[in-house]
Amino acid sequence: MLIAQAKMDKAPHERGLDEYPPEWQADFQRFSDAILELSLRYGDSVMIRIWDPRSLQGLFKAIRYGVHRYPTFIIGGRKKVVGLEMLQLGQALQEAGAAVQENFSPS
Image 1: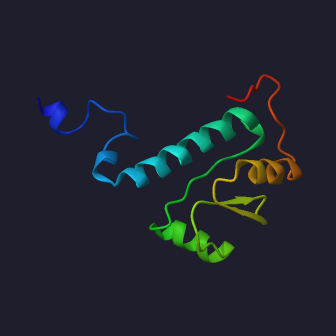
Image 2: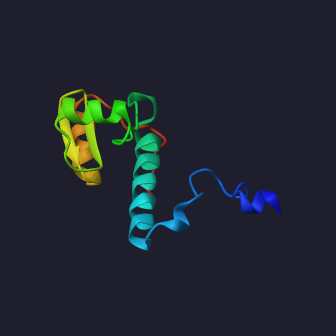
């Protein structure tokens, strides 16, 4: 009973999502799916770091790279890709030297 009340019966990324509007939940799911696809597609040739813009470190990164909209991907410390445009993001990653994994098959 206590576990259910503390929402420990759900995975960490699922806890608290039901408190947000459906469109925010959908945005979170699209973002999560995009990050998973990128990690599967490019494997060790990319490093994915997620910064919370409300944190001090996230605020610093947003100011440093001139980020005003989210999500924004910074590639190679130079190129910015705003939004979840996977085609544009994939092109930018490949231009920066990321290699598609041999065993990757798009879903």
